[in-house]
Image 1 (tube, each protein chain N blue to C red):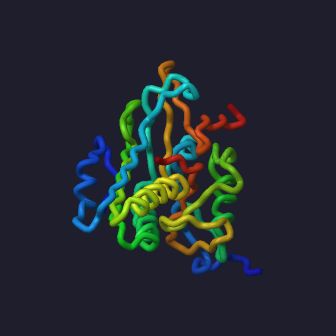
Image 2: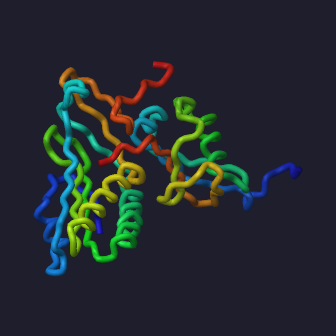
Image 3: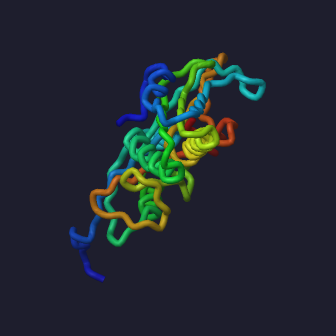
Length: 91
Length: 146
């Protein structure tokens, strides 16, 4: 294991929260950095650990990457936008 | 193209968008804000959305619908913001050469909206309370720490 993480192996993603999730976390967006390779699930875990109130988010929320629904095992890349979506209630 | 508006929905405008001499049937669906016996004094619903994704997902959804009914002409708008009881939150119109395609395409779009379009609603009630609604139509459970 290297002593330091090479910045090239770090991904910074923009995380967006909506509706009830935004109320729980107390914000509508955040930025998190995490080592690659990383998945949507890794982003969710990081958010749940790092932000007060985010512990009340579900462990397996509906999510989207770059405006498209994505599974929790989907890979994320540097610069991606990851959205955590409460159960959809449109119409 | 934008599928979102904060203004009252105009069915006439949508009908004009799909109008075609080749279409003999047009189906219209309106979803309206309800205060029925299962609600608790709802005066309005506040609609919010992941707007960029709504636009992208509606594009994909309508492409899917056009793949299924290539001759159909479909338009849709979802309204956001505070919508009083009785007013429409979504309008879908589908025109097709024959009525079966128009009905089917219209139904397909509203059912897909319920699954795919990231919109959320919060009930505003006569007692002053505000409650997020979950997809089953029941108010969302409060978080465990409340």
